[in-house]
Length: 323
Image (cartoon, rainbow, N blue to C red; front, side):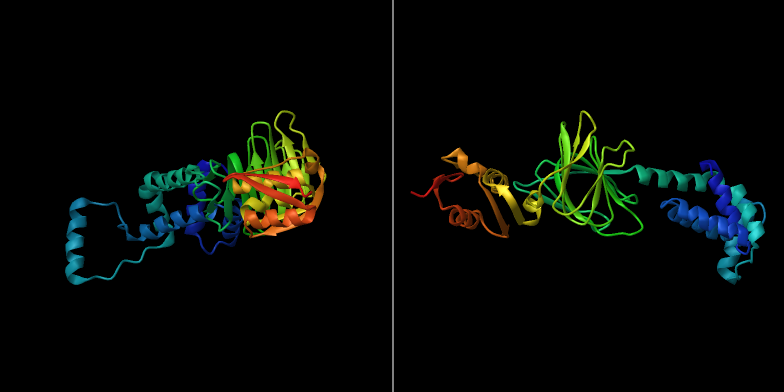
């Protein structure tokens, strides 16, 4: 149905509430787009307001006389048939009011919110549907104010999404060259001019290049990557729960190299962690840090690998083998 046909279609349906065929057409139209119910409500309010219009062509002098008499005599409101109300609306209200209602909905659909993450370590945001987002400082998100489509654009940076489940509507995150679709899950997404990667903490997501191709399905602990230059989508080998730990304070490393562990801890706690012997960086460990401090995490690593940690400065540690 063309946009210009919608006002007449809705009013025709409202004018004949007992017409089963038209009411079914109206129900079908409501299901075609999530914005249609709100549009119908605006038209319904205008329809109800039309009952207050005078039955015949409006005359200013007569209108004032009728108003004065009604305040004294409190005459009951006149009864207006559905059919006559339809013609009054079509002749008096539709040219201006219905156009205004349509314009308002169009403007609301276009109104965007831009959120730029603040703070030193991370920021947080709750979206209109209740979904939560944790953001690295400087990360930029865009989304429509009405949030009917449950779509967020990650313009730059890194964010962890904890999505409220909705079986009827998917949640979508788009980046420069990637798209992520979910129903209800939690995952981390990082975008740059070179690539976008997604690591899943819980549930399932589909990562694609946004070019109509199916992409890859990601499950907990897996990670996918989209190359910005080639558009290639790949599922990486290994486990990647730790990529979500900066946001949910739950760092889980499964057979990861010490280099990966130290790099992740350095990023989260804003310190420099290095080793005196670079060969140590290749040693693999399996460990989980949940809601603990940096000092507690280093104590566990020292115990596991028989190391000591020299606190060189307030923001630097050197790990060495015990002699």
